[in-house]
Image (cartoon, rainbow, N blue to C red; front, side, top):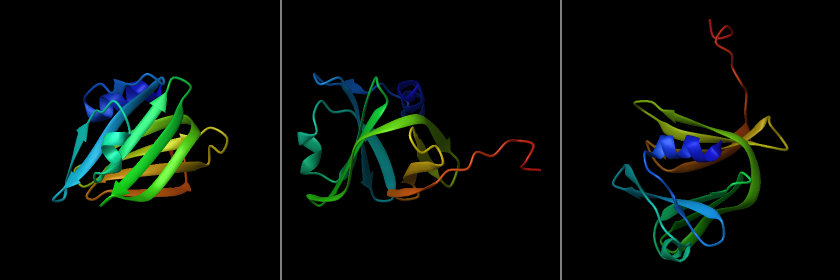
Length: 129
């Protein structure tokens, strides 16, 4: 479930390592982001970027480094589903937590890299009118 959503959102296949994890690396350069695939987290630890890893059991890991320093680390959190948003002004991915479906981790890529842990409300189409 997460695999197909992230592959569609990023427009490319992730790389799978020997530890059963799939990886995407998000890099920010001059107000734009690019997506790369890597085989290990070693490449990211010295660079600016966000390493997003997940496995077939929908466990998510996120490692965000900037200038060789760790900004945020999330390890092995179970995800119920993810939702990708690509609008003109904002690109983001919302990871809905398995044990707390009213909570989400939001990874914003555009207009700038940011992460948020907050509430998740599912809105039906009839309610928006």
